[in-house]
Length: 107
Image 1 (cartoon, rainbow, N blue to C red):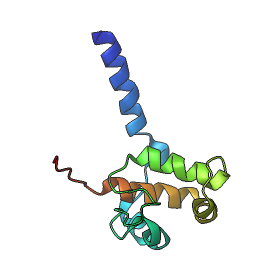
Image 2 (cartoon, rainbow, N blue to C red):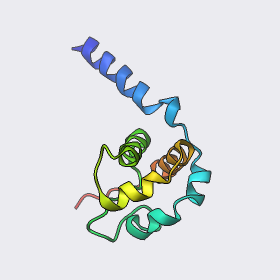
Image 3 (cartoon, rainbow, N blue to C red):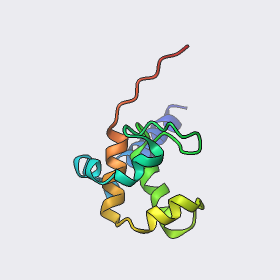
């Protein structure tokens, strides 16, 4: 059991620190003008059709944008927006939204 937990921890740790997605959060903040229309000024969406991006895992955000860009993941608006993003843009925007701290208050 300890061995399984150790291997799982190593795998999750390597995913969280994947250098391929090491973006610049400050640069990403400057690139989110289009994103704000649906996902909110702070990554917390007021639109029930758009998910919250604030505090999401950086690798998840980057992979999602790559899939939207390639058309592998389908959403009319996101496929159009993501098509214009470079690899650097994707890394930076993902880093920015991942850097936002979200506090959860249980009911």
